[in-house]
Image 1 (cartoon, rainbow, N blue to C red):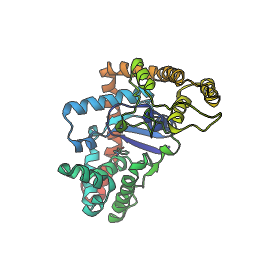
Image 2 (cartoon, rainbow, N blue to C red):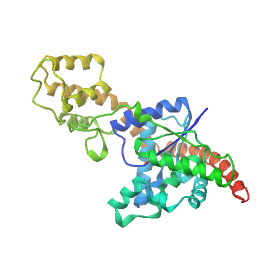
Image 3 (cartoon, helix red, strand yellow):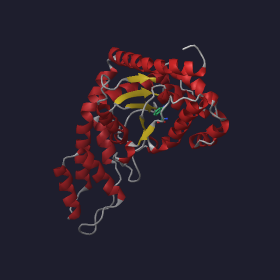
Length: 328
Ligand code: TRP
């Protein structure tokens, strides 16, 4: 079975946009592939989080991904910093990664521009660490968003370069798995664009019922349709798109018909949408809370994940050491 590795940056709570984007693809992939998911806590050090920040955000991811249905017996979840052989590969890859090419990476240039007082070496070598994450397991596929394509190209470049330098056919070039191509784009509640943390327009999977209701009732609308069967403007289409995701077809059709007949009351539609979003989130939310109070279970999953991943990475590294001319 093909091997899949996916890294998750610890960036706060999951929202509906994440769920219908990445998470749903992960749930599918864990059935179709030999998957491992890890939390990229080494990568997160580029922004200098406190120990408490790290512990907190790693735990949050663990609980939320498990609550969504990632099944660790099928797809181990591990914390990047628990798998030390990756660091050794990071060092080897860095020896053949060139300043010029690392400096040309768009996300590096972007960070260098927006945070000129923190242009650290970790930021520069982000692509080599990411390559080490994947190459250490000789993975075939990596589910990534569009923004990671350049990092994936660097990864393939480093793999090819290693093979060429040592005249071996050792690393394969991991392929990007573009889950965003069949993922649903979830709109935000502010009328424009998609749901995203930086847009402040999210419904989080851990939001309670009252919070969901408040957010949905505040969603932007317009003054109503002025013609029968008119095309919906973006702000309204967004509400219908959300409804398509969480409500039954009957509910969707009911409000669609009301809109087409110009008899829709947005207040009623929002009330229903809030109820249906809550019904969707409630079981996930309950599982998040349950996992959060079961520290032992989380520790066990992390330990077992780390064991599986360390074993796989140690095997690769032993071979890499031999290829390089070190003791295996
Ligand atoms: N760079 C990825 C992101 O920002 C996270 C990541 C780190 C990753 N290492 C990885 C993803 C390895 C896939 C494989 O989302």
